[in-house]
Image (cartoon, rainbow, N blue to C red; front, side, top):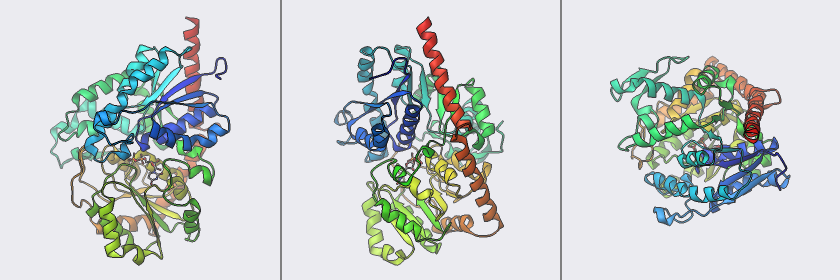
Length: 491
Ligand code: UDP
């Protein structure tokens, strides 16, 4: 039963692991601050969220689910495909989002019958329907962004200056007016400015309107990591930005960490045992996120680069439509047998937080999804950056150029987001091997990179402690909504 005057947030996560995982973390944190949270979900996702939050709910935190069936077939999606990591090809991404927008009606019906109404709707950036719902019921909407201030500011500059329009496809250009000299190519811009054959103008115009109408934005980052950009974004959003991260740090012990995300494809104890048997700082952890669909040929280059590094490594092979091809190669090549003395293959879902926070890890080869990047920062390890699409190229710039804790593999080719993937090899094994070597080597440059990474890791932990910037921002956010709620009651 809700307590009297208890704040109530309705939380609507975007259904892709990179979005729903931190959103669920946010829900848990809000509940720990005494806020009642209701999470909108669908049957398959409900099971996923339920297992992540099980301990929190058992301990009596005010977390509730609102589960609605998703009519997948109606939108041409396979049964049980309720999240972006499950779509058989990226061409179906937009259908998935359409299917989810049909939840609007159900959510609105729920709100009709609910009194008092929630004090806030916290929903994913792209969920335009949730903005309509918030407007209809006059509930302040806060966007759960999923990206960082750096990306937001880059996109802001691109949108307002249109600098990219006058340059050729393969030419680099500088983004004007930023605290650092950031150079990008057109092909490295996020979907809005690099849509391929998709017509996205209308969608992004609507998105911009919904963003300008939102009450504020929650960012999974911490101010000290990207101070100049956080300040700039704060100005753009008229002080309604709350950097409350790194959210992944709300997982304290090993068993809690193993719960984050999907069901693990490896036994936690086995994974820890392997890590414990390795020297400190010696292992490369390679994982390209939850939705990237790297071509099998390219995956082979990665595998061979890891092998030729002659260092111990963990290689995560994502389960997906292309996995059989990759498995065939592993098998024919005898790769596993050949590398078994120093490699651990994880097929499917890896306990990333648990792995990254183990002292054996010395470097993280990442696709630069924002969550992975930030988790790497928290772990205090240098990174090998291999962006694939969307704002991952911006994150690479942040890591390599601004924070100077990473080495780029020099990825150039991009798949336009939402389109079926192109085949072929973009990055050669030798380039991958070189970048791995630079990150892991013991020379002066490598040492300094490691030292900076460690320092940032410490800052990340400080940010979420009592009195830290993110902790304060969380309190400020809740107080802000509380003030909104009381003005409403008075008027
Ligand atoms: N992740 C994980 N195990 C895996 C793959 C991914 O735990 O095998 C988690 C990872 O820790 C991160 C999220 O899934 O929190 C992926 O989000 P990110 O923004 O890095 O990339 P995306 O998957 O959205 O491209």
